[in-house]
Image (cartoon, rainbow, N blue to C red; front, side, top):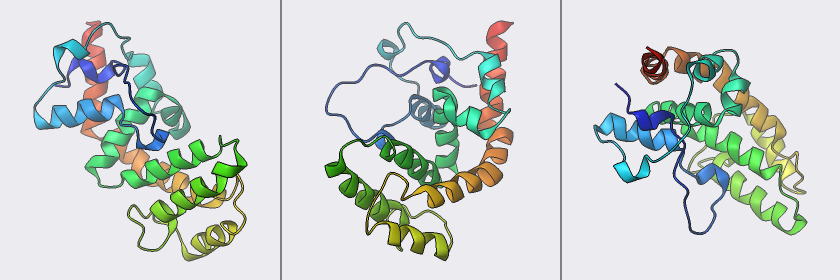
Length: 186
């Protein structure tokens, strides 16, 4: 049985901001705690909104619906961690964050950091893309633009949509979450 905190939003955090793809998801933490048999401290489960069965059911409508919902994104991240493939989602999120970059001065350094972390051969969190896409992205790095990762991001999105997403919908994480939200209604 999943803890009630699974569908509650995270507590407000203080401290220096980190890139959005490095921020832990509330659900990810709750699911990790659930898997370890521990629940978050009671003081962190104050007044929060709850995930509805309708919202969780809507995640099965399409992969993009799942990605656009903060709880869905967190649950999917937790699932990918169980499969040791969270780098795909982290790369996709890093690209989404990168596209919001407005400072020309920061663009090149952010692009380099993403490339070194996810794209380069033997990168610490290397994503699974074909040679041509990797080389095109490498060439795009010569003059980074907001679209320099578009092809690689598209390939990773497609891979997650065709491979990980169907497994997520059949996973114990998702089915338990649906069951838990339905039980609250009874």
